[in-house]
Each structure stands twice: as structure tokens, then as C-alpha cells.
Image 1: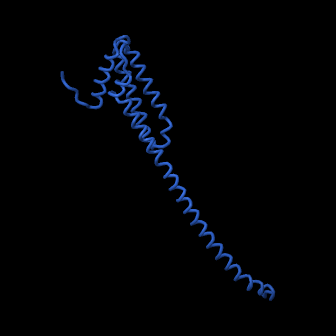
Image 2 (image 1 turned 180 degrees about the vertical axis):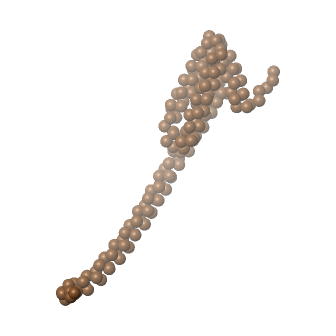
Image 3 (image 1 turned 90 degrees about the horizontal axis):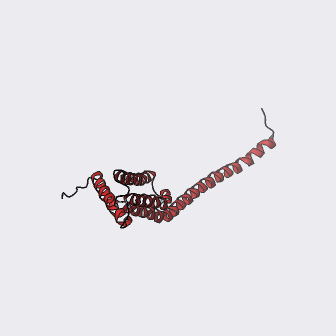
Length: 164
């Protein structure tokens, strides 16, 4: 099979051009991929730089929340003279819920397992309040609830109680 001379000449002139084109295409593609990767890493580093203060703030706020719902602190902050058991229970449960809702958005900055621990701690403290109040008369003085709640929470947390 004979090829016409014009076609052979065309292929001879085209071959070097195609080689240059594909070499250039390969190098430019590789360069652009590397640049894209570097830009993505740079963007990720900038995002982490911006996110770190937000994450730290979320951890700080949630640790403050846990401190506020701890039995000793919560009882001191929520107690008012003249309250009944029922009023005191409602006051504590409202505070637990309101503080939780106030910090609800912080979950986007922390890990899901940590958020589950925070949510479980909230539910456990609320259960302890309800449990302590359930065995008391709703019209009894609030100090009885605080005494019972502290006793139950110290038993649950394995804190030794002093013997009187």
C-alpha cells in the first residue's frame, strides 16, 4: 500500500508539532494540578486558622455549661429563700434547658461524640433533679430538694459523704 507523497510530507511535519503539543499539555496539566493542590492546602490551613478560635470558644462555653449544671453550682445559683420543692425543681430544669439551648449552636464546632456527652450530661442532671423531687412533697421547702439532690448526685458520682 503506497501513501501519496503529500500525505507522508504532512505527517512528517505534523509529528514534531504533535509531540510538542502533547508534551506541553502534559506539563501544563501537571503544573495546574500541583497548583490546585497547593491552593487547596493553603485554603484548608486558612480555614483551620479561622476555625481554631471558634472551636476553643465552643469548648470553653460548653465547659462553663457543664460547670453551671453541676449540682453544687446549680443549687447555689437557683435557690431563693421561700421557694417550694416544685418551684425549685422547675427553676433548675428551666435553667438546664435554657443554658443548653443557649449553647446549642456550639455543636458545629466540636466532635459528635463530645456533643453526645454534653447532651447526656444535661439529660442525666435533669433526671437526677426530677428523681430527687419526685419523692418529696411539692409544697415542702426547697432546701429539702437541694439536700436530697446533693445526696443523690454525690452517690452517683461516687463522692464520699461525710458522716454526721
